[in-house]
Amino acid sequence: MALMINEDCTACDACRPACPNEAISVGDPIFAIDALRCTECIGAHDEPQCRLVCPAESIVANPDFLETRDELQAKYETLHS
View 1 (tube, one colour):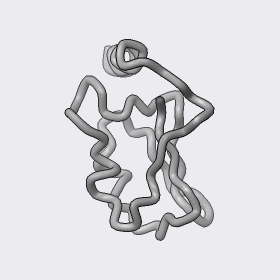
View 2: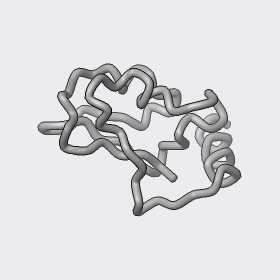
View 3: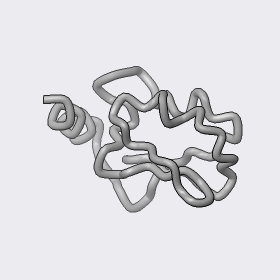
View 4: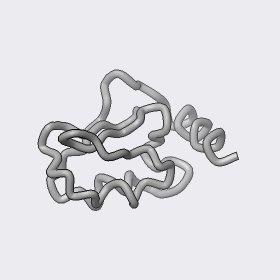
């Protein structure tokens, strides 16, 4: 399941550099996660790095993108091949 940033985002930019897939971009007024690039850090880390660094705890599961761990791993491999 890809992640998304909710309206609690403070646009602090802590999450964007932490993303190994470059899935996070500056939005107006809040940041956004490209669900087609988000793997919840599967393939790179044990847990989503954006969630670890987000001071507002505004990064949540995106219910529109239900994916298994294997699908997320395959997406990561495609992005980094």
